[in-house]
Amino acid sequence: MLIEWKDKYSTGVDDIDFEHQELIELINKLYDEMQSADAANSVPVFFGELFKAISSHFALEETLMRAANYPHFREHKEDHEDLLDELRAIMDDYDAAEGSLPAGTLGKALDVWFTDHFKTHDSKLHEVMGPH
Image (tube, rainbow, N blue to C red):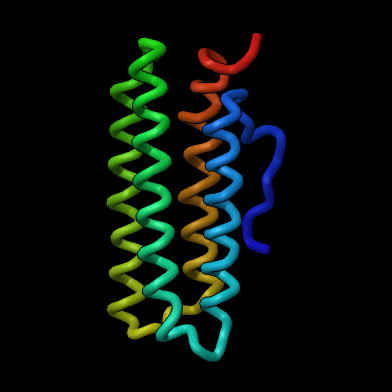
């Protein structure tokens, strides 16, 4: 397991937390798949699923933030766009390495990518939108 759900990741918004947990599961499955014998064929498919799920999740977060007049909306949305760009770069690196990118290298990039967003932007989201 690459990333484990921790209570500190909770935003206090059930829909967002549920999707965060699903995204962690997808990232962990991708990491496991990268170490399988069929990684060259299956990993690009997992990347596609992960990218789609993350894009959908960000759209949900942004909808909820807009509805709540979230004061940090612009910077949070910009971080979402940066994260999607970084994920595309990770996917491109994997493709360029023709599947030979070590799972540990990619796993570390995904872990940092995901947990840093939780620690910064999603913790602010919790302060404003979570239960008080």
